[in-house]
Amino acid sequence: ESLGMKYVHIPMRGGTGETAYSPANLAKFSEAMKTADGKVLLHCTIAWRARHIWGAYLIQQGVPDEAAVKHAREINLMDTHRMDDSGQQPIEEFLARKVAGVGKP
Image (cartoon, rainbow, N blue to C red; front, top):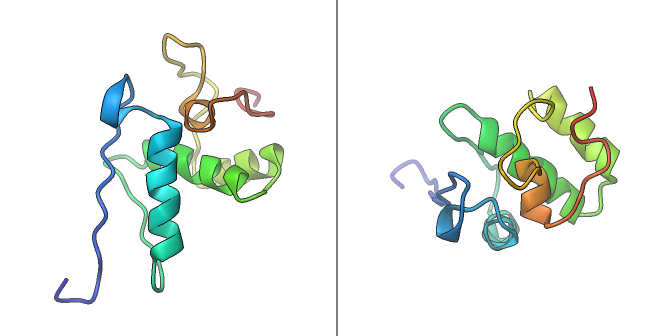
């Protein structure tokens, strides 16, 4: 705060509830982006979750699936090997639908 930054914490670890890769958490992220006044720094411990929510956000904003996935991969989206028990990637869980191009190298 002393540097003029506003910190927004959206905890995500997958699974269910408040930490799920869910449309509700994507909505929280979208609201934070909407109300941001200036530049935004998006991060997580290893940037894995950040890449997935960023890609989902781009799609939500109207970027075509394949273009959003390509952009997220350019910032190291890892979507070709990890899926949870649902068989979906987190980017798909955030949007509650399949995403074209996900899981294809």
